[in-house]
Figure (tube, rainbow, N blue to C red):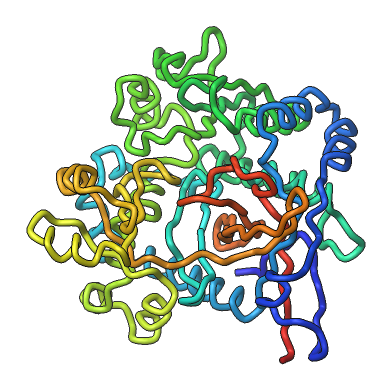
Length: 428
């Protein structure tokens, strides 16, 4: 696995501050609006710039988040270990046992945009979840360009080419040398999605590569003549941004039928979600006895236990213990994503707790996020942050932070949003 590309590099010697001191006192909260506008206008995307400014004013932060190289190295080692475990037939059997039926279909495509999300607070670096349709990567290539310096490893255009090549690899894994012509970016009611500007950027990226690209709701797709169609257009590949990860709702039945028939390439797909992103998988990956039962070696068990926030199944029989220890727990739906229906235990009401007990939830030991102090609108404010590795096929493509206030990331915080990361090789 390669080292991650970061948006900037700061080289710190023994006379300069630590990571913690930099996150507390370093003030660089500039707004990247001008550079963002220039970047989008250069690639003919001025209308998307207007949409970003008007509809998503807190999508990008002008701040830098500082992280130690030692923490990044631990995270990469953890990601490598997780990928090794996921290749084990014993692990696959265990997680597919509770996956939806469609997830048992094993395509050759691997699934684009894995996202590994970490908190780096007082308890150290902890993986809190893995996502299989992690949004924001293409948007962050714009942030890379808007905040570029001479030390940046890759220009925006090179990052975008890496992203396109990933989709090309997905297609070739399933279809070999056949020509890829049409891509559908699929999500529920896409015109109302917060990250619609990114969908539009993907359309432009694919069009620059000579492809026809559309954005649609899955209900607009039809499976007929052993092909998937959007109106009169036959779809070759679906970039799936929908959060019905098991294709269980009626609107996704045409897509599910085409996928299971091998009539369309879908990425990311239910199989990838079942292996990586179902929250119940973290119960296995953070449990030494479960791992040993799967045949995982001692060294790997130690890396997983140290690096993953301990996670347990929520059972009605454990209600008393869960309620008593709720202040140290975070409750998440097994098939959930982001902050939807997720609850920090110390904010929990008995009514919501009763609903959790009736659902399919996990309880994760609360791992505090990192803290970044910034001067915003003339006042010092403390923002929380998490770290995301975007990955594909054992390669880290991009490393970004997300700044926010409140319970979880929300892209509604003044001064918050996606932020560049500076990896510090501390010599303290």
